[in-house]
Image (cartoon, rainbow, N blue to C red; front, side, top):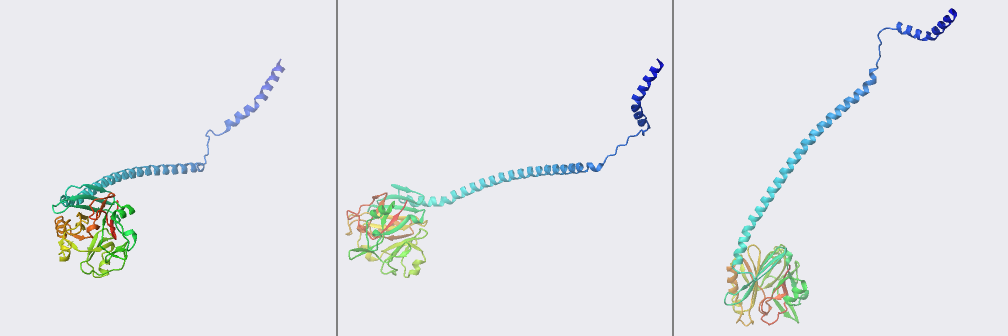
Amino acid sequence: MTMRVKTVNRFFLLALAPFIGLLIVLLLQPKQLTVSLDLDTYKPQTTLTAQSTSIMNGLDQAEKVATQTSTSIEKTTRLYNQTTTAMSSIVQTATVQAAKPEQIYNKRITSKLGAAAERVNSDRIQIELFRLNPGMYKAYAMKIKLLDPDAMKMTLGKDTFGGAETTLTATQRYGAIAGINAGGFADSGGKRYPLSTTVLDGKYVNGFQATFKDLFFVGLNRSGQLIGGKFNSQANLDALSPSFGASFVPVLIKNGQKVAIPAKWQKTPLRAPRTVIGKYKDDQLIIIAADGYNENGSSGATLKELQDKLYKMGVVDAYNLDGGGSTSLILNGRVVNHPSDGNLRPVATNFLFFK
């Protein structure tokens, strides 16, 4: 029995020996446990944290700047819109105010013509047709405002030097809204040639001829202004930059003053159908076509009557164009006046107006 107990005790001692040895080793170690940390291992993490903080601070600052900039832009935009609105209002007011003198002047000259019987309005031209009946004659007045210098042109009869065609045919052929006969002409060899100096498209059709006798030149310059008068040299006419023009007799009004009508033209003929062209001080054109049933001096208007009428209307320059059976006034495709020949006469030159 004793031997058996001893055997068992030895067995347990041998089994527990490793654990007893481990316990002895642990008991022999120092009581403090020192843990060594390598702080350099954490330096990257510290650096990264600093960079992140810097970036976040930068983003916060950028956000503040962006907010301030946005606010500034909004304020600038509001100020710009307010300024633009104010400027537009000022420009609109100024435009209205600037137009008032023109409107007042236009009403003043129109009041002397009466009520318009017909109107044509476009972005190129404004035309008003009036009927005149002062007592001694009957006539038609056409007031024209050229908004485009190219809205008025002159044509040769059948586009040929020496050719002739009626004003109605010319308006139809060119698609014009209105037309009148222009300068005088001379017949030779079955052809009809314009008198004296004639300009077409800025060029002299048959050279320049210095003014002689009572002839004058009348036409439009490149700016769309009526020019005319007597010219002794081509240089004097060139200085006015003529775009087109024709010649006839006589001048009626120049620079707002009546021009003495030569005795010859006061009575040859005394009365007749007449076509005259003039301008107001604002460059609006005025055309008068007086009716008459023949050319023998017993019907129509005298040059003095038309001169007086134009002067009272405030016209600053006025010129007598070819008359008699040549007098033609076309508007909207129809003959407005009553040609003394019974039919329109083919003429060498025509002034046409375009819508």
